[in-house]
Image (cartoon, rainbow, N blue to C red):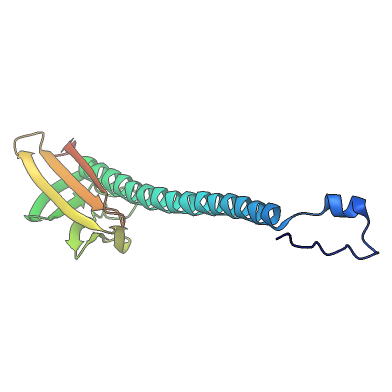
Length: 173
């Protein structure tokens, strides 16, 4: 049994009917459009996650480098140094010849929770790094020149670790 076709309304020409989309064509174009939109969204989401990961790891690496360089520089220029606790080092600076009486200043590095703290008589308390898992100063050589080994480990929010370790020779004692 054949179905009858409805006649076109008089306002629709045969050329317009030939240009019109069928339901199958319309559905296929919507599916293709949704696939392209999904792929574009996943690219944007992935790039945002990658950016966040890189920024967090770069921040952790920067904190480790800055803190480590500061500690090494202060050990090298100190006139005295001592390890007070397994994660604490006390330094005495060279006399400041620009000040009357040539004062010396104490600088202490220690862990407070997961933060590496610098306590300098001149500047007060400073947080050098966060998310520190280990800070270990040890005396490797006690005869002159005195040599310290400093180990600093930080963990990024993503769980990656950054470790810096170096032997530092004190130049002035």
